[in-house]
Image (cartoon, rainbow, N blue to C red; front, side):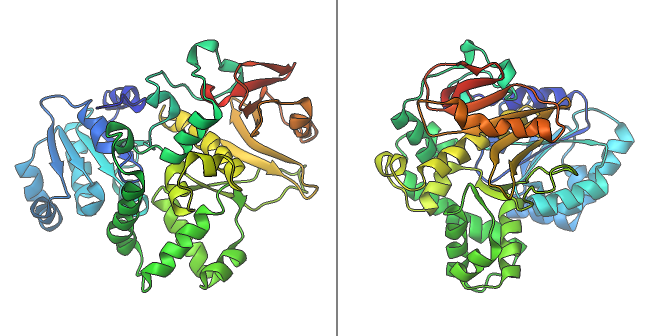
Length: 401
């Protein structure tokens, strides 16, 4: 069963505008599948997962492009960065739109080749796991508190919400509902380490790296403390920083930067760590049932991770880079998320409550003191209706994301 992806529309627009369209993102989020459902019959599909094709691409790129003619769809392009200069030559020679579709999982090596060879010739799109709206078969738009309507809602009670969080967003888990979730994530982690991590760094102790990934999962939604993690994993701080960078590069986590300007001199400057997929995060941190998760010590952190991940997807799946931060100062005044768009800052608070109160958003007033022009704020929570909290803030049920 194919679930329509929001990015499909952006792929068509980019193909009509750019010679090369590249989709990046973690493994198994559907990069190949979304291209296949957009593919014209005239476009040839090639995967560099095939060792013979990969060998030809790496050893003789010129012969590769004599053998395979554009328009091409080249899957797993990161396995043969030798192709990038030849793609540039082909693009500059014919100057046609939509000549090459590319996918890749390892963003560091991939983006190095792209920046060196294809700058100005490529549309770079990012795909994450299924968004809540995609699961519900609904249109997705970039999240802003002042553009929400009653038409994009689907009620989520506590059990349904935490079932979504526990299952995660990998398409295979929804295309095949009978799949064993724990087995899926166990296999995913093994594949990730064997196929991605080993190509990026030399791991002498695989179990220690897994311990690190689990330590990171236990800290989703928290400020990064490299020293604390280093003690838990029993490696150096520099190793932790390197491994955090690897998780971020491969798309398993994202770091949310704190907002500060010249006025906000008391603002903290340490980023927060979030897992991109809550299902993987739950697996790594040992949550196996909806009941234990929704009532457990990490229920709030998992909800915050889920909400922020959904908001990020709403931008990325529409071909946009989200301009987002959090705010926290030394007086412990905090705003979970700041979204900047068109010169306005939109504050968002995330609460595990069905009874939101004005006091929940009292720190939104900080933005005016920082000299920021603000749009409408939002409190995302477990309330079941969209309604104003006050003149400047709207209550947004999680199901509206």
